[in-house]
Amino acid sequence: MNKLNMISNHDLILEKIPNPEDQSSDYLEIWEKFALTMNAYDVCGNSEKAFEKRDKVFKDPVIASLTELRCALFIVQRHHRWNSPYSVPGEDERIVQLLKLIREKVKKGDLN
Image (cartoon, rainbow, N blue to C red):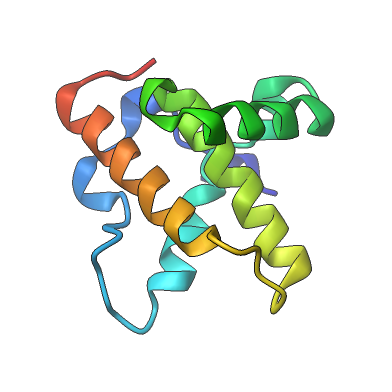
């Protein structure tokens, strides 16, 4: 992954965050590309801790911070990339929920 593609929470622009209600044919590519704008392995310290963070977020995503939500989305993207076409049951709903929550936090200015 190229560090040039990384975007800090404070540099996120709402209009550039994928809208989970978008039905365009390139939606999959768009959300995957966005997910890679934060490297959860670096943020969490390693892949094991990143997966633990994802599990924590999935238990109660509403209370997760923006960083935690983005880390979870990153891990979902990596799983999707390496295990496609074998999706995890409920994965699509999780992606939608994560994107909605990320968009809400950016809209409110809750950038931690």
